[in-house]
Length: 195
Image (tube, rainbow, N blue to C red; front, side, top):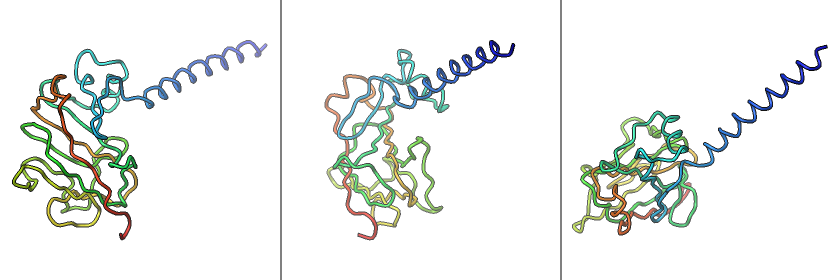
């Protein structure tokens, strides 16, 4: 007597549960299509337009983020150093080069969830184009580590993996034609632990 309702209930649980799990898996596997990669830095220029693919739209909705318009800015992230090793808070890094052409840029470290990492109070958890020290040719060197460094220093909490987020505001790179000749800063591992 209870056999048919039980089979219907089990079937519905499997169907709805499997559908929800497969959808979540697909959303976590991709941040969207149309990514560009420049020297280890990744951006999704189409994610900020009305023509964004469904995965990009769902990531934007899930994170609750307000993205810049296609002519306003572009967000680049880097999860690997120059040797294609994952960035780790127990290591020290040097980010160097010329900044991409933009009116203003910001740089901060984020967790794998995309949320900014909070270093110890009174330590620089973010840098921008107005506060960074530059060489006469306009290039910069930024040390990224958990311990204090002279010059440009981006503080990290002594944690595991992290991602660097470089946001370019009012940049020609936000248009598709500006991405071809764009040069991004390099990220070099300069030591791990007490080395």
